[in-house]
Length: 296
Length: 327
Image 1 (spheres, rainbow over the protein chains, first blue to last red):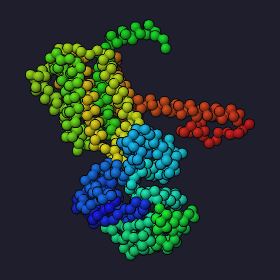
Image 2: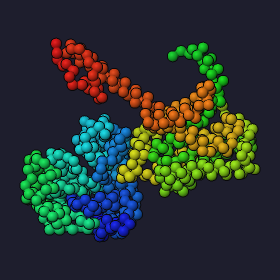
Image 3: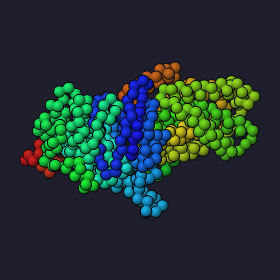
Image 4: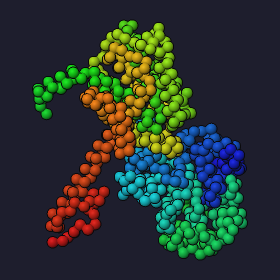
């Protein structure tokens, strides 16, 4: 997925101004930025779910998708989660994930087409069902599959939403603050999960406030401020850049408050914000970005 | 089960004395299905009544000109598909309250058109002496087929897609569901059901007036759906039986019918937003859960020899404090 010079306006307000970046299969990319910096607008634009005026181009494997409907983009293989959990309350967890199985392609978007034209008919229901179970297992909500989403704690609801997004094996996975409201341990687990998903060939974009999470999970990162990309590179570089320190951490932000507040128990020292220490509270190093990228 | 001759005879005489009531229920159930499938998919359309009028007049006029019933139904269905598709494109940009207003306007426009096309429709006085072509049996058949099709859309993938659409159309689109196309399909399906309802009415009762497709018809259809419940076709059927049947069987209080309905809708909307069917469904679920909990408790008490306790949490798990392992 390539984004070139994307600009989105709502009336006179410029939400995004000349944003360019690309997501690469097998890589996990982090996106940081303060509230109102355009992160969610960018995800809406990437999934074609926004209603603002727009300039620039978004290309999926070289093809422009600017004129596409959101469902077409989704069927191409762009899946997403939302900043606030948006599950269907009157379906159980399993059915919610089942709803993510793409219509007309029981074997997924970019399915293994070598199985021939009748593969879909042969294994349709059982295949979909098996993949739902697999997705539930992947995010770790198998035990709750018969429960209603509203009966689950928020962290688990988020996991269900991730399961729904990955059940069709998307090519691009967009995650809007997936770890909000989670404990340090849960974050570590999810970070590891996103790494595995990227390792399986997806291009993953994680919008995240937690600087520590981005440094330990992502291969690449960029930062938005006022709708502009103010820094890009490896997570360590991005977080170390003066623009990010100024814009994202704000005045006096060098104290490392975000990492500390959002990852309790990880023993965050102020220096952690610069990414020099990316060890999780669980003791799982998780690998820094580049090393995991090499593994993938 | 054996056939009880007395029961059958009494059922037979019941249908004879109440034939027109039962037929009205069936016709209204079809109309309710038509409203239901829209609301269930989050398409707030009240255009069903317009298609009711058009279907009724089309079938009535064709029957009066000696056309066969099958042809009349074929024309009604084909016309509803075409007109429904055209209207769905025209109304594609409207949602929620705006769509509701536009479709109510459509209903009223159709009433005016029919009233003024006197030479074809008989004007405000309506169409009379339509040959009676249908009996209760055939109407039951039409309702059964419609209910069967609806039942299919309530299960499996279709049922999930519909629920996701109603819940959040952005999420539906993000999951690859062709929301626009689905909405158009729902609108066309609703048009066909509405037109079928009208056609059945005209061919059952041999008369149809433009005023029957007016605002009060919209209110009746909505009452049926709200009272019965909009989530399954059973709700439409139950709602039609209650709304049509009650005033006829409770004639002593018929002057208060309007008040009773108004009150009933308010109560149902407050107490049982999923309608009577939803209420029964929840009740059964609760009883089953309770029963399971009791059963489990009884086993526990047998195992451990302690006293049984009725304290069961919502999930059927014995509440804390139940003696475990006490001699």
